[in-house]
Image 1 (cartoon, rainbow over the protein chains, first blue to last red):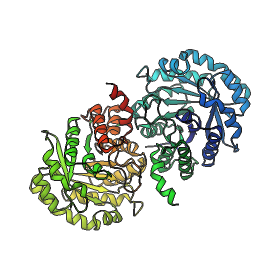
Image 2 (spheres, rainbow over the protein chains, first blue to last red):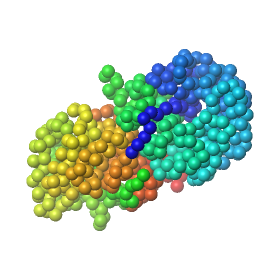
Image 3 (cartoon, each protein chain N blue to C red):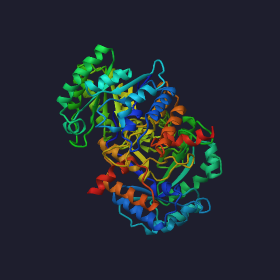
Image 4 (cartoon, one colour):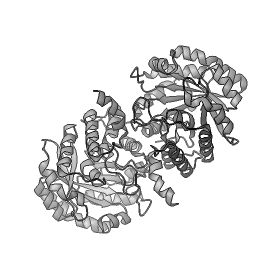
Length: 303
Length: 303
């Protein structure tokens, strides 16, 4: 067992997480969540999404969120920008980094962004060009890397092809998402091997969902493969739109607890993170799905 | 990554699990749970506990449970028997296997069974002798192998010493329990290395709790170490008495899902197992804590 000495945690709770919660949260609360996460030591936060408000109504206030954040030097505030219109709005709002998102399966691409995988890549190309011209790094997401709710199994070669296209057009990093959480460690490993044939391992991030409880096991297998960037969502915010009542994004606290135990540095204060998980969960009126947040509550309440 | 081709799942839900649930369940329901688990392909079930009913009131009906079970040839029905009185009662009730339980920490031993670790081992010796004379296998449990709620850290050497004592007195297998679920994969690995200095790896079982969400990652590390016996609890029955509202035993469904994904044989039908998880959870009036049980519900409801 060998793994990186330091891992970069990429926090997606304020955007990916809250977007998939039933209950709406105000831009002010979103901005405060971002501030609390950065105060807990999170270095990169996906704070907003500049997609058409018609598609994703919760994101209408993205510029408001960006304006309300108390920016901390060194922290990185990112946003989704699927097209040029979104990119321009994100740039105006002052984001540090943008992201484009493709699917590894045709079925998901059509249902999620209403075009084929190839068409989505063409739509992203000018965004990546414009971002480069503006000096903004672009992250690429690939969803459904271990299974698709519409197409079922997804061959590792399909994931590698989409990831290589995003990296090839200029994304500085590609985040590989198990959108429906069906993967297990051997499948995750095989998928990573395929992608790492085209992209350096240090340019790969992993984005696991805990829908079937497999996220930490998949992360352990990924660390052993050399992956050092992990996406997660505070309190496990997000749920799973494809399995009502089930868990979505892996909880940041659960990942950080494991990394602490493995002696892997993250720069994150676990107790401050758990307090933040309870803070946002209280606003949603339900406990965090994070095992660590629940287990540490009694101890923190006493302190 | 290499792991065993077959794993033996040791089901502890009907005893360890239900004993730690707030709500009482009748002997008839316990027996039906055992029957349903065996029908789903579970080969070994901890069905009862013959300790003083004064200590653990829920277990007063253990003989009733054993009598109500519809025994299936080949399946193994086990019980806890901390002393000679318990052993005689268990034998009379027709169990196939008995078990004794020690702690790796003095603090837990005193609080849990009211004697020192050394005293507990002396109490178990005649039980193991009597079981051998009666032709019944004896399993040894060690609790607090990765941390103690009273003493804190537990050195791997202490775990190894207690495990070796149990194996030395005649236990056919020793199950190592992370009773408060605080362990992470590197700690688990170090502890297993210490124990495997004294006991063959094929005589070691692991018993992880999911209190901090680490159980599957610890199981993956244990499989890579060569461990092929895993304790778990259907629906994650049990909770954690040391962290109110937190998760206890790892859910059998979550483990089996991972093992299926790794191509490791268990003989268990995951869908039948998930149905059983919901069946017992409905009787307790709350959903299973198992991620897999929740995620698969929608699919099973449609079928």
